[in-house]
Image 1 (tube, rainbow, N blue to C red):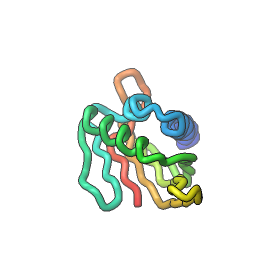
Image 2 (cartoon, one colour):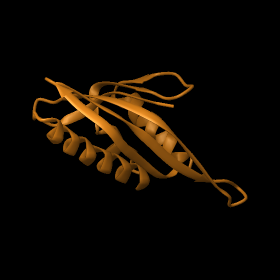
Image 3 (tube, one colour):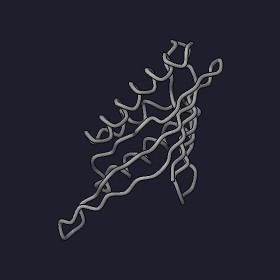
Length: 126
């Protein structure tokens, strides 16, 4: 697979991830993770496995986070593993109606699935 192909695949995954998150669809977000995936949230405990990841995103979306966006900076592939290095941003509106924005770095390791698609195996951000 060419780097351009994996880049296009990851751009598509990012679009679907942001779309599902911003539409408040945690099951659609969780479906983008490998069955053996681990999410490593900044400053919090690691979350592993499908049910735990679904619950994590359900709880996170319920916090009222809006306008999530992933920006791809670099992508690469080696066999059945691929990676993404990028940036993320999002916002919240506080009780006084003030919009607060936050952002950081992210890294995602993907594993090719039996059907040829890619799903996140590890996802970490700060």
